[in-house]
Image 1 (tube, rainbow, N blue to C red):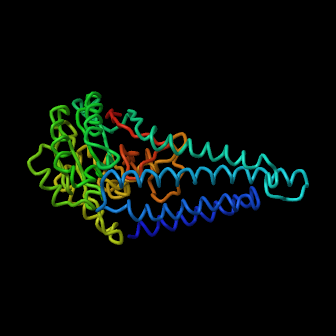
Image 2: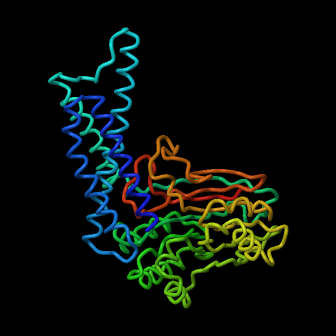
Image 3: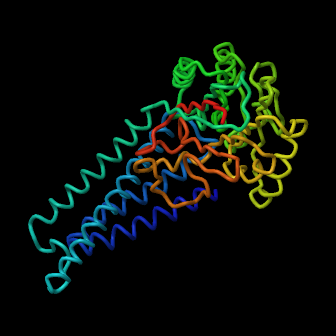
Amino acid sequence: MGFIVVAAGFVVFLNVAMYILLRSFLGMQGKRIHRGCLILNLLSIIGIGMGFKPENAGELTAIIIQSVTIWLMTQIFLIALLSVALMAAFLFSLLAKRRREPLFAGMKGGRYVVAVMAAVALGLSLYGSFVERHELHTVEYTVPVEGLGERLEGYRIAQLSDVHLGSFYSLEDFRELLEKTAEERPDVLVVTGDVFDNAGMTMQAARLLDSYSDRFPQGIYYCRGNHEYIRGIPLLEIALQDKRIHNLVNSNVLVLEDSRPLYIAGVDYPMQREQFDYLADAYTKKAMEGVPDNAVKILLAHHPNFIKNAAIYDTALVLSGHTHGGQLGLEGMPLVPPVFEYMRGWYSQGATRLYVHPGNGSWFPFRLGCQPEIAIFTLRGR
């Protein structure tokens, strides 16, 4: 319910912004055009209430969510374009020492200019909704580790995250993702939460993931995300109990012996936000129990804020997700408000490095400037 209220408030904000900009841009013509926007925004609020609920699923719900997404993103892009145009016109009027008037007000071409901007905004929205969110790509990174042993030199780790199985990511999509990841021939696969996001798919998805265990020579390692809690942890535990997947719930596994042995640890997701710091500290402490001080430690944590806890234990690498990289970006930089301290890509705290994966799927079906990815990390000594 909290999310629906916040989302509805955001739609109201967009509606007010559209009204102000259209009036400023076209005068009374803009007011008339805005009436259509108002109707669509009211329908969007209803759609949010109907579609963005865990208990609702199915093709109709998917159509509602996708339609609302297309309209909201079109509106956001149009607001951005109108704002830039209005600011440019205002600056021009100051430089020309002219009286400020609504841009193109009373001119026959005004509506055509707005129409062109609306077409561009719609095009971007459709591209992000139906094209880019399916454009999977592979990225490779080198992770330098002090005193790395001979057996771990060149060790390759693949990461997937935030698949969000459900209306916008099918089991067949998941199979294709796993197949493409296996073709990269990493030593291990790590999956950092928010995979099992549809209770009706959980059992099949667990079997599918398990079926790829032999394709990753030293195993598959998984930690929970918040959406697994939304869909039901008891069902997930039943689905994973007889599988070869290493289900890391505040625990660790010795992966490879070497002069510095490799351990992969994983932490649970703290659902109680007001207790996040306390739980993160307790979860990390438990996850690192029994891990030798000289080990090469890799921590799987759905929420990226665990870097602060991992650094205490001299963890070499933290792999996380959760943020989806903002789902909207430019040249690798998120273009959304910084609601997360660590949004996308690389961060460090002391000798500990964090990678925030942009995700492979989404419950909000849109990506622009933030492609889904297979991330490959190669360990190198230094």
